[in-house]
Amino acid sequence: MKNQVLTKINYLFIGLMLFLASPLAFAQEEGLDIDVNIGEESSPEDWMSNPLYWVIGGLVLLLIIAIIARGSRK
Image (cartoon, rainbow, N blue to C red; front, top):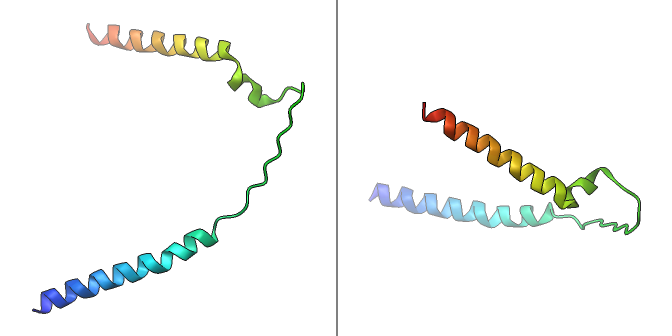
């Protein structure tokens, strides 16, 4: 009987904590400040949109995987 009461108290406590944590999580959310600049200026992030870098990166990754796989056979 005592064990059942403690279990119910634990469930009540956990439910209360989740209920109170929800408004705290939403209170942390802040409005986004988005500034989109469409222009010809280059920025350091431009390399991510260049497909050439993605292809070269993929080839290097495949080469590393092939070297590791070949080395494990010896």
